[in-house]
Structure formats: structure tokens, C-alpha cells
Image (cartoon, rainbow, N blue to C red; front, side, top):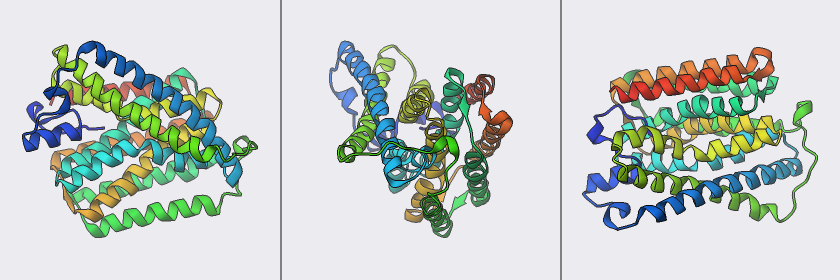
Length: 341
């Protein structure tokens, strides 16, 4: 997801388009005569792929969790979260390698705000999400800490290789802790169903299906928006922002509808953790980054959003529909701010 503090003419609706424009290359959709009917078909197929892939992903991941002896929450924080964060990983690392640090950082910050605002809020509006002590005091607090740490690292608008190494080390330590402590379950998170050899195929295929669905959703929706005369800036902060987070949305909603609240919330918190300490950590390790000073306010907003989400999850041990509406309203306010820039 991309939220950039640059002029409207500088914003492109995905890293692919930004890169093509930088090189003066026409994009596939601009260079061919793909018609509207075909793109509508692609859009519908992408949505179907997203939901079918997410449905299978939740079921398969849950069975894998049962086999290796971990909870839905842990599997949501790890395998599911990493899989659904693949689009953000690809955009951020490609931007880093092409020396576009504002896109690298803006993609992650915008993605995390969108995950905690629009997606978590929307899922809670559809069905309230139950939380647990482990989700709050272990994973939620850790998310707040690493977000504040990122805020500290960017106090000079720079992320060094040394700081990138620290973030990557935190990721490895966190993953090790989750699986070393896998015997610790909360009562409502214990999994009994076991996986079969089919899940070794279903799980990766489901992740790939969800990622592909999100990719084609962005491409086809962007094409249709251009044909409708919508500006690239509007496309960037709406269609692409939502499209690149479609895997998280589909998976979290599918999980909560199946009563797997740990996997639903764990997917979003895990995605945000992976984005900060994994993706940005690797990006900083590969290429030390300087960002526009104006981007610091987005990091401040992300920190506030993380604290608010954890507080909401703690109140009554549930994220209610009313609290979900507040999160969505904050996400919408963020879009209004971007439109006004």
C-alpha cells in the first residue's frame, strides 16, 4: 500500500507504475487495447480468487497449527501474516533496490495504518472480534514497542544498516519465542484438527491465490478507474491502497466468520509486525534510507493507531462494532488528509 507525501503528478498507482514512469516505459495497460469488458471480467475473477483462496488458507493454516501444536493466534501471526504481506514486501524491497526510500517507508507505514484502520475496523463492524490476554499483552504490546522504536530510528529521517540489523534481529527473536513457547495455549485457541499431506499443497497454493487475486484486482481496477477519468492520485490512495491489502482483508474476514478470532486479529497484527521489523529491517540492511521529514507525521499517526487498537481490544476483551466504526473513520480521515496535500 502506498501513501506518499508528494505532488499529485508524482504519484503512481503502484511501484510497478512508478518504476515504469521513471524509466519512461509505457505500462502494459497503457500500451495495449484491453477493453473495459475484459477488465471487468478480470476484476470479478480476482475478487473470487481472493475469497476462495482466503477460505482455503484459513482452513489449511488452522490444520497445520493443530499438527505442529500451536494456536490459531500463532499461526495467524506467522505463516498467514507473512503470506498476506507478500505484496507489501515486493513493493518495499523493489523500491529500496531502486533507491526510492520514500516509497519503501511510505508503503509500510500506509499499509499498517490501513490494516489497523480500514481492515480491522471493517471486520469488527461485520462481526465483533474477541481478544485474549496473549494477543494484548504479548503481541499488541510488542507491536506498540517496535512502532515506537521505528519512530525513534527515524528521528533523524534516516534508517541505517545497524538499525536494520536490530529490526531483523527482533523479528528472528520474536519468531523463535512464539514457537519455543508453542505449548502455551489459551483455552479458546487450542486446535484439535490435524493436517494431512494435502495441506502442504493447499497452504502455499492458497497464499499464492490470495496474492495473485490482489495483484489483478489492483491492475484491473486501476485500468477501469483511468477509463472513468479518475486521477492517478485518487487511484493511488484508494484502489491501490485497498487492493494491495486485499489479502489481509479477505483472510481476516474469512477467519472471523469461521469463529477463528485469534487468526483474524493475529493476521493483521502479525502483518504489521512483519512489515516493520521484517520488511523495513531488510530494506534498511540492503540500502540505508533517508526519508522526507514531512513523512514523520505519518509515523506518529501509526504509533497512535497501534496504541488505540490495543486499548480497544483490551476494553471488554472484544473489538466491538462501535470501536470498528471509529477505526474506519480514522482511516477515512487519513484519506481526506492525503487528498488535501
